[in-house]
Length: 425
Length: 167
Image (cartoon, rainbow over all chains, first blue to last red; front, side, top):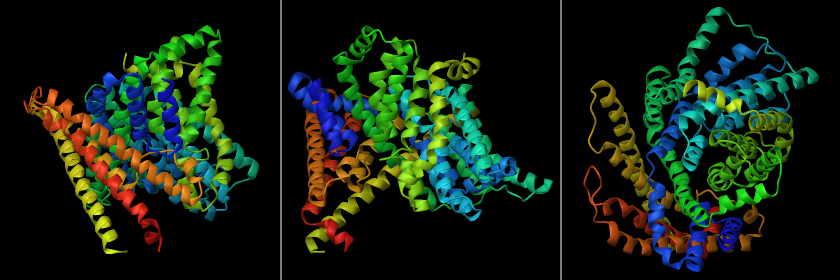
């Protein structure tokens, strides 16, 4: 067992792709400890790829790409401006609100940074906001992309933890919205302190109506997708396929911005992204199988229980481990590596799989905006030409919203339990 | 670029494009079948026999072949932070070592698949009744393409492809 973890750590540090690092360390384990079981390697790999529910993954990715290619970002920003533009530091609030809505459509934080940042970072600079502030608020608010449902990482967690996708989507809605509200409060405080400008232009009723009409078709999509899963009308895979069809129809017939020649490229991007995640899932099944064979999760849980630590100390320790892992490991592999180890531990201390899933995703989202490997930081750096250290420093005040919400989710279970028990009893 | 390097480069790119197109077509079929199944269920209270099974099998192929393409495109998820801190020579060595190790695990899985397929490959699938080896063979096929891409990557690294590309 020590050999498995040691070889995995060395291979990961050597920069070997995570999927193959898992495969190689599994092979070393079998070769040394269980040579008679070596033959099950391809069978385990195959069974890891055999998951009907994971077909939702490329479909949800494609849905987000199509909406983005259809020019949804500018519409959502205009829509957000309508509601929060009049307040001091209005564009900062627009940035947060746009990310909240965009999160419900794309399910990805990185595409949120790229899409919203590409429009709002230059726009905010033009209106007198500092480039550090504009970039910092963009990356911090984009963390909501993978928390607010529908969320691609939630689907991966649902598979790893054998939880209901619908319940996870519902459970993450309140924490996602809470982060958004807290970020808006922080933005307002900073805006009044720094005397940031308001958006002066007052729209007429006709203009407001037009703005609403331009955004409404995108706004109802996440409700439509989540609603169909929650109400049992469709499975997650079917809901994602309907979401893709909806995005195609809206992009071609209503927005009229989607081009036929873009579709194969977007579909290819979605399926290759999915293959990259699926191959990690397939190899991680081998790793999970070995952990179960060696009874590692049970040993960890009983070991920690024997320490006699209070529950809150265990939860805080788990959150800290998630935050540290998130700074070095990408979200999908982190979910697959951490879930089999820590889920049995927190369950032993009274937490359920749904609550842990929301904690895990919320914690890992912070990793996207922390150096050295925060993907959102890299994207924002490419847009603003700022060093990632400067962007991270500017994002820190806003990340207080994520950290506070993380603690609230861990210690107030109702935040994650209430909505699923209400709508999916 | 020397003719040998050009041949290696073009073969690798050509094969990757072919595999990309194959997985994209599989994905399109998956999407269309899923939509058709939903529509048939709600509009006609009907279904396509083996539809879900076919979708699942196509998805397995997209994963096997897509993972191989990602090796060629160097798009696999990894922790690159520590390796990126190395000086250029060691960085290049780590890339070659990485390609060798990835090729090794893929070759091992492809080899082990032979006995696995011979044992269970003839059993029919639950609904379509096709022999399971038709689907299961996607594992060694994907692994062998991965080995091929790793080998071309190693050759390109040894021939100094990076210098050529940057020049």
